[in-house]
Amino acid sequence: MSATGDLYYLQDSRTYVGNDVMWWCPNGAGYTTDLRKAAVYSKEEAVAKHQARATDIPWPKAYIDAKTRPAVDMQYIKRDEALAGTGIALRKPEKPWPAEVINCGGCGRFMNERVRYAGPCEHCQTDNRP
Image 1 (cartoon, rainbow, N blue to C red):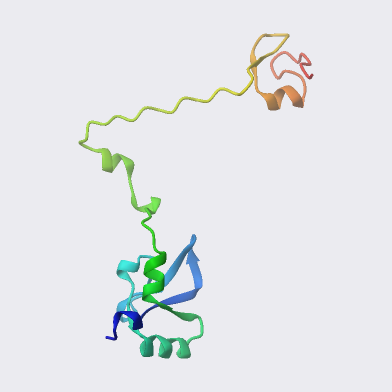
Image 2 (image 1 turned 180 degrees about the horizontal axis):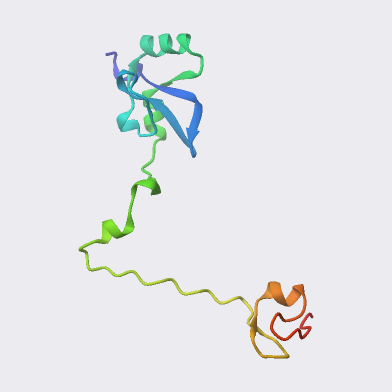
């Protein structure tokens, strides 16, 4: 292989996974978004692959390595599995109250803003519109 400055990743620019770039895997074994699993090429190899297929874009390894960030793909994590045996019991989030709690003037039931402005109370048909 070449010196570190002459190493390249090869992007398959035909598609993305979310916002993630698709990189060639070693030995042409598919594509990955995980740079740890991406193939690294010499400049000559990367250029030759690009010349063979214009959608395969060579990117300098040093440039891409400087732009990476750790991320966790939610498809690969399972909360119950991760917390098993830890003794941590998650509580259910509380339902947020609307900014303004409104009671119907006719039956006294709670109303949300959308219902209040849309028309009469769905329970007693009292018109509570401002």
